[in-house]
Length: 429
Image 1 (cartoon, rainbow, N blue to C red):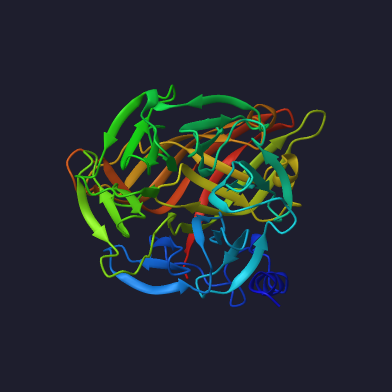
Image 2 (image 1 turned 135 degrees about the vertical axis):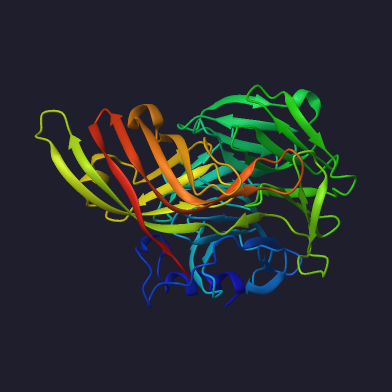
C-alpha cells in the first residue's frame, strides 16, 4: 500500500469533520484560538507559533508537501498537499479525519479558501484551474480551465462574494462570479510578478505576495496599486500572507524560511521561525475563535403563516479572515431549510473601538451561496471584547472578541427572516 492509499484509507475510516456540532469528549481536538499555523513543505509538517511568536510542538506531521491551510467554520483544519494530490482534514492532535480530491481531477493542490456557502475552493496548479467541493467533501465543479489560468496558487473571496485567483504564471489576478464565470482580471498596472498568496483586509483591499520581485502589494477594486512593500529588503520569495490578531501582516518567505510580520508602513516588526521550525514555508492561517450561538426570530415565507424559529449555530472568527462565519448546526431546522446555504459570512469593520474599549459595533452584510438569488442580510452586531492599539505606526486598533449579540434581517426569494443572534459561550480546546 502506497502512502497516498494509506492516507485515504485512514481518512475514510474516520469522522467527517463537517458534521461536528458542539464540542464533546468524542469530538476531534480543536486548535487554540489565535495560534499561527504554517504549511512547511520542506519538513512535511505544519509548524505552529503562539501569540508571542514562540515555537510550539508541530501539531500535524507525516505530510509530504503541504502548501496551504484553511480553517472551516467548525474549527477543522484543511491542508492541501501537492504530492498527494489531496486536501486533508486534520485536528489539533494530528489525526487525519478526512481527505478530499480523490474523486476529482485535482492535481498539485495549492491555495485554499472557503466560499460564502461553505464550499471549499482549491487552486489546482497541475490543471491550471480551481476545483470546488461541497460541504460533504464531494467534488462539485472545475472553474477557470478555459480562462487562461497558469499555475494558480492563492485563492480568496472578496467582500462582494467573488472568487479571486492568483495566476502566478501569467502575472494576473483572475476574478470569477458565483457561477464560476470569469468577469475580470487585474494586473496591478504591470506590477504583479508571479503573484502567489492573496488575502483581503477590512477595507476590502486585496493584498498580494509577489514571489517574482519579492514584494507585497495592496490593490484596490480596479487593480490599482495602493501599497508596495519589500519588507525592509527582507522579503524573499514571499508566498502565503494573512493579517494577525495584532493587526500586522504576516508573510511566509519561502526563500529565507522565515515568517515576517509587517506593520502598515511595510516595516518588519517581528521575525518568526528563526530556529528553522518552518522549512520553505508556504501557507499561513490563524486558528479561529469559536462560539456557541443561537438565532431566534420569525420567518415569513410566501403564502405561508409566520413561523418562529430558534436555531443553534457555531460562530467563528479568525484573525485575517474577511469576516465572521455562522454555521447552522441542524440542516433540517426551519431556518436552514429556508435557504440552500447554511453558512453565512458577515463582512465589515469595527465601527467603534478604542484602546481599553470593551464594546464595539460591527455593521455587516451577509452574502449567500449565490448572493442575488439567496438575498442579503443586513445586520447590526454588538461585540464585547478587548480592544487595543496594534504595534507599529498607523496600524488600526485590534479587537479580541469575547461575545456577540445583535439583530439581523435576511431577505430573499424564499421569504424574510428576522430576529436576534447571541453567543452563549466560547468553545475551548
